Length: 189
Ligand code: HEC
Ligand code: HEC
Image (cartoon, rainbow, N blue to C red):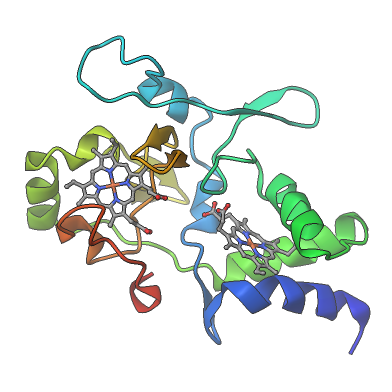
């Protein structure tokens, strides 16, 4: 097996939840997440007094700072940047742009394409106040509407700042009883 395949396989080894899907949802659509998204909701010091503080994280891009959107700590603004971080963390060598492009293509091909949530579930979700972080704003990609259900900000719910988990692709998450009982269900993602 060529070494190139090997690198992709190393990355996928942690992310595959089935032979044909990974645990990272909506990767293709995310390309069109508007750049201003986190800015729309940013409120690091709770200046609006709603009891919810959410902070952006700026990360370095190739030519200018970007808002982090990838990873639970918002460590990167682009897939490729997170891939480099992951490679460093897991001792994987990504050998140039071609290999990076293959990794991205493999991840995108295996990333589940999320559907919009059921409107009744969404109404209950909003009524419970969940949408103050898991925002219900939408964006368009390839002629379809997507709702990631995240402000892509960091909130500290007691264990340090974490990105609001995007809930698209997780059907049971909207009716989850709260963060204590919220568990990752790979089959739903
Ligand atoms: C040892 C297991 C492991 C390996 C190997 C690994 N990852 Fe990950 N990856 C994780 C975990 C756990 C997370 C979630 C932690 C986080 O978001 O910071 C994650 C998060 C990510 C994310 C962010 C997902 C999101 O929701 O924003 C991307 C993108 C990613 N990995 C890509 C890669 C790539 C590319 C490689 C190969 C260079 C790789 N990973 C190798 C375990 C792994
Ligand atoms: C103050 C902001 C905030 C509010 C309000 C909020 N969440 Fe979250 N939610 C988060 C953050 C941050 C995470 C990520 C936690 C972590 O990584 O430890 C999260 C994670 C989750 C997860 C786990 C998803 C996964 O992939 O692991 C579920 C399910 C969830 N929230 C459902 C809800 C529901 C249901 C409500 C309303 C009852 C709600 N959330 C209200 C910020 C919020």
